[in-house]
Image (cartoon, rainbow, N blue to C red; front, side, top):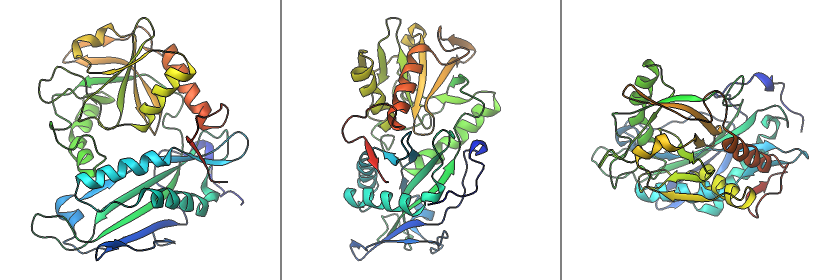
Length: 341
């Protein structure tokens, strides 16, 4: 299929409508067969559950063109699993995991012309999402839902190259103990918007959230998991019941152990330990790893020995290895790469 006439090299990270999206509706206790449609508009009642009580969740993954010309996506089964967990926590019906993966494949196939070419730095971003559609005025779950998958071609998250971030220790809490921090619910991101905009107004790129119970342990940012590197090249990632289980972080841990031979610790990370680390990164689908140069703790700066001006050496190896797997330059672990074409 001929590619769309898009300036791939200059794409931003924004929404461009593509030709097809997948839509399935839940009614009377079951999901319909679903279909691909060209209609990008959503029509719901003004009293819909999603509008009244934010009953919605979503996922994010990408499709790539590999070095040998295949179109692939990365570990969609884990996105299906995570969305199922989000639905259970929000009292929403689970869209079957095998159907989720099949719908992702069909949506990518239908928008093949929008998958950027290899070497362009761009990818096709895929956004599965679900929301309550019927009228709900009392505080209760909706009875009807819509599951959708749309796509949009996006450029590299960092235009002009990766630049280390400056983040601050936030006075806001991202999630409550035993709350919804471990699922990908829209309400979590709505709650983080003021904090991130306030950080930007103060000159920072992101927030570091501490645990809300004691405010002594590192949790995550508004949309990414932390990854630290010790002086002896050990990888340390925070562990907490209120951290979103990042698929990128899980993949990087495997890369660190099996490809780079590095020791990895998943554990509680006390904030007082942070100055002892030599590298810090934020893990997520959009950028894979975003290097952090410094953390501002209410005026006290924590600067990392590696990563102040460019990505640190260990972080760089992790980034290059994982992107090499995703783009087909390196052999992937079994089941990681779903070939579309």
